[in-house]
Structure formats: C-alpha cells, structure tokens
Amino acid sequence: MTYARVVNASRTARERARAELVSEITAAARRQLAETGAAALSMRAVSRELGMVSSALHRYFPTRDDLLTALIVQSYDALADALDAAAADVAEPAGRWRAIAGAVRSWALSHPHEYALIYGSPVPGYRAPADTVPAAGRVIAPFARLLADAHAAGALHAGAATAGPPADLERLRAALETPDLSDDALLAAVTAWTGLFGHVSFELFGQFQNVFDERDALFAATVDRLGRLAGFVP
Amino acid sequence: MTYARVVNASRTARERARAELVSEITAAARRQLAETGAAALSMRAVSRELGMVSSALHRYFPTRDDLLTALIVQSYDALADALDAAAADVAEPAGRWRAIAGAVRSWALSHPHEYALIYGSPVPGYRAPADTVPAAGRVIAPFARLLADAHAAGALHAGAATAGPPADLERLRAALETPDLSDDALLAAVTAWTGLFGHVSFELFGQFQNVFDERDALFAATVDRLGRLAGFVP
DNA sequence: CAGACACAAGAGCACTGCTCTCTTTTTCCA
DNA sequence: TGGAAAAAGAGAGCAGTGCTCTTGTGTCTG
Image (cartoon, rainbow over all chains, first blue to last red; front, side):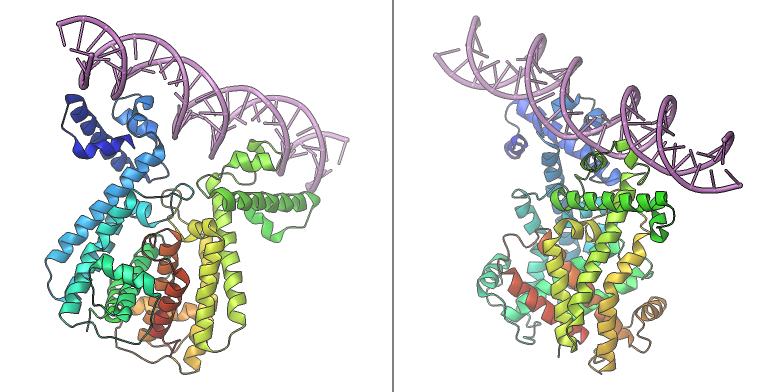
C-alpha cells in the first residue's frame, strides 16, 4: 500500500516525484488496459513504456493486483464523474433516470475494458477489494440523489408490499440518506439499479449477440420499464 | 477445431481414444477452473495432471482459448441442465419462475468460476464465440417454455404499451417459439431475464458487499418483483 | 506392405510476475 | 554540517507460462 501516500503529497521533492511517477504509471496502465484489456496488462510492458526497469515498478505497485486495484478505483471514479455530469442537467425524475441510465451505458460502451474490470468477473481469484468499496459508493451517489428528490416530489408510489430484510434496508436507507423511504420503494430502486447493470453487462459481454440488433431502442425500452418499476417514470 | 470431431466419435480405435482423451482433458480443466478460476487455468498444469507433456495437449486444443471455449460450452450445458431440472417439477407460472430463478442463483453460487466464465467479462480480448452461441441458447429454453405456458394460460397481462424494435422482436418471437406474444410481454420478459442475471452477477461479483447481508431474502424479493413485471407472478 | 497419417516427447523461444543484490541518491537528525 | 538511514534505480535470476518446431514411433489404409 505504499502508493496510498499519494494523497498527501507535495512535501519533499522526493515525495512529489514519487506522486508524479505513480500517476504516470497508472496513466500508462490505463492506456494499456483500454487497448488490450485487463488480462493482457503486464507490469513489464508498463515499465517499458515508461523507460524504467520492471523491478523498479514493483516499488510503487508491489504486485500486479495492486496496480489493478488502483485502476479499479480510477475506473469507478471516472464512471461516477460521468454519471454526475449526466445527472446534473436534468431536474425531473423521469428524465434524470434516463440520463443516468444512458450515461452508464455509453460509458460502458466507450470504456469496455474498464467496465469489465469493475463489473465483470473479478480478475484474480476472489479479491477482497477494501480499497475499492468507497470508490464504488461514489457511483451510486447520483442515483441516491435521484431517489431522494423523486421521493421528496412525491413521485414514488408505494406499489405492492414486498418487505425485505429489515436490517439491510435500514442500513441502505442510511447509506442513501433517504430516511423516510418505504421498504418497497427502496427494494424497487435496487431492482431497477441491478436491472440496469444487468442489461448493460449483457449487451457488452455479448449475450445479445444474434438476438438483438437495435440495441439503442431495446435499452430505451428497458430503462423506461425499470424506471416505471421504481417510480421515476410515471 | 480438431476437437469438434468428438461429436461423431467411436469409429476407429484411434478416434475412440482421442474422444476419451479429449473428455479427460476437459474434465481436468474443469476441475482446475473450479479451484482456481479461469485466469489461473494453465495448459501446462492440465497436461501435468494428465501425465502428458504440454506440447501434446496442443494437438487436442490448439490454443488455450480453445480449451476455454470448450469449458464455456460445458458450463452453459451444466447450467441449462440445472434449470431444466428445476423447471420440470413446477407447473404454475409463479412457482416455475421462482424455481428457475432460484436455480440460476444456486448454480452460480456453487459454481462461481463457471458462472464468471460465461456471464462475467470475456477473458481474452473480445472473443467471437460462434461455438458458444447454441450452448447459450439452451439456457433460455426453460424460460421460453415458461413464457409460452404462462401465455397460453392467459397469465400475461398486456401492461403498458412500450413497443420495441420490430425486427428484433419478430426474431425473438420466432426463437422463443411464442408466436402470438405481444411486444410488451416479450420486452417485459427480457427485462426480467436480464434483471435476474444482473442481480446474481452483482451478488457473486461482490457489488452487494457491505450493503446487503441477507442475500436470500433480497433475492426472493427481487425475483418476485421481476416475476410480477413479466406477468408470471400475479 | 509401404506410404501417409497421427501421436508423444522434448527442446527451445519469448514472455510473464516477482525477488534479490548492488549501487547511487536523497532525506533526516544529532 | 556530517554521517546514518531510508528510498530509489538497475540488473541478474528464478520459476512459470503459451506456443512452435523437430524427432522418433506407432497406427491406419490404399
């Protein structure tokens, strides 16, 4: 975890140089990730691109998995930025839901390897993310705001009563900062969210191959339906 | 594609021996896949387990990707078998939907690496499956039957009118062999199906970590909601 | 029965992640 | 300010990988 020191950098010259090099490394790694995917990303290739010897790279990212973890965090951040930007323009719930959903999809399609890295199968065995959890939380923030705003506007009808496990829902309510949202609306929102990513993953990972050609229209229809399920779309 | 000859085997002694060896290879590979995951599966390790030299293995699977493709096909088949078995017992739509959905999840949880192999991110760059497409089709067969039966029983209400791309829907109608199903019911079924796999993937790939503990109850609630969306659950 | 084919074995190539040692440079503090 | 300590770079090396090529042997078939 040596590279974690980057956050409070710019003290000594050495630390500034280190921080700069760390970001150069992740930039080069991101470039290779975008080109060839996570499976083909190699420490040696990254070090070669930077003109250093591979053993030196291990001083900054002791392990390939550490480098991948950094890329995962950065990918979460990039996606979260895209969603924030997309959600900022739209006030009313239905449009905002469509904007967020569309941003998820277009980010995924334009950054397929990054998307696969964070929402595809974990690359090594079972990783214990830990570092990645807060970054993952940033992604749902615009969705949480949408949920809170739509609820405040009275848009979320109660729907059928399908209660969930109480402890989990209480924690989720707190995490989303939507204190007085009903169990049902909360669960419906979760279903819409997972359904959205399910659709995007299916499309990106080839499950729609030979089945659907007009992906844009299919996605729009699915998003509308999920939005209606959650109460964003009237 | 030499190993494709397996299908019409048992002619000469040599071909029988070859077919047997091919299935021994995939069996060993499946064992390693289950233990360490697709990323760690190595031709040399498989050949070692079988007591052969690694170059000999390349005669049966010219490339590591070819071996993985065979494992993908077998995984699709195994999942399809599990779903067929689960769906066979239940007649009425709501229960059958729950049975199929539950079988998807429990197969995924008990075969995480196989599930990741077929529904996670494509392991090499962008693979063109071709061989895997028909096997993937087997998985949705029980779902297609459920859809046809529920429709025949008049269970599928029309719902709101959200038409999709006509060409795609026509092809899907033909593939599912549900000739007179409405556009809306068809699209709702697709949303339910992708939502189901979205949920299972989220759970398996750690997206629910630190958010939900009682996964069984959460899954049941989601499945009910998706089932209601598609019209299986009243 | 002889030529064509299939096969196993081994050596070898280029690549990988990672470790260890050795040298140089920078930082810190007494 | 000088010297110990920490950090950094370079290089060699190890064990492993996918894959190819060659060499010898066994098997099928015209």
